[in-house]
Image (tube, rainbow, N blue to C red):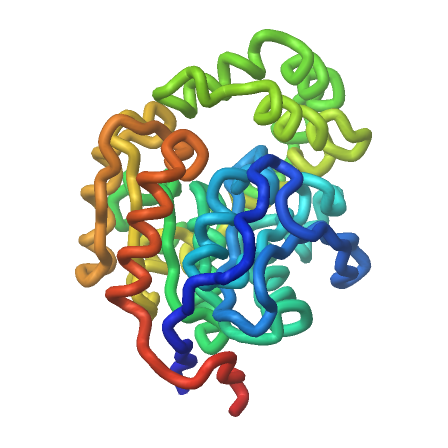
Length: 327
């Protein structure tokens, strides 16, 4: 059955302060890992889960949570495994750190913590994770918003299945190359050098949005002793994903309402990539956000929040609140 949600009612509480430490933080244990998450709003309100992008964390939604709560949502955000204040595991061949594992983490979070289906809103990698969760665990998702949707496979022609010997050789080659990279030396060097600022500025069109709080939000997790091994694990995992875990295949299987927001000045994933999406899912809604870069939610939160809330008002099915997927 499809899960439904009642229209959210505007919150009567005072707006919560903005900042990377928004909401009530907590830790949740999942499959031997410590997962950091936060929540803001009334727990009996419709649930909305925010999913950060690569290198970020739940604090990156510092300018969005309060506005969404004021519109009547209970807003959750989670640090994906390997990011933020969550555990940073090493590579394991039979448990690759990729969007399938993050989708499993998200589904367990919805079941055990949120305890209800939710709207998923993701920036960049978070958008891919949201779509993956909606495809693999459809009863736990109401709708997905991706801003934007990155995946190199969107630019590749549809290929026939690789020969078995090619797949066999590819794995050890990718693992070897990732292990040869001295990430334990490179990662702290990059974080403590102007290269971090250069990377952040490439993600924003408005350079004034790159502030000290943002730098700290990205730098602190990258300086943890286990950060390099987690980066190596996700590099291997994402490079070796099977076809069904890539964006084109996921989009073709997705049955939920999907909004894709794309900054017109995105220098990391140019907006031209967005034109490939409708080849795989004709009924998605694509909105271009003018003048913003790769992180529209943080760079121009008023524009982003308005687009999200307007789309949710137009696309959510009305029904009893907090209907459980097993009901």
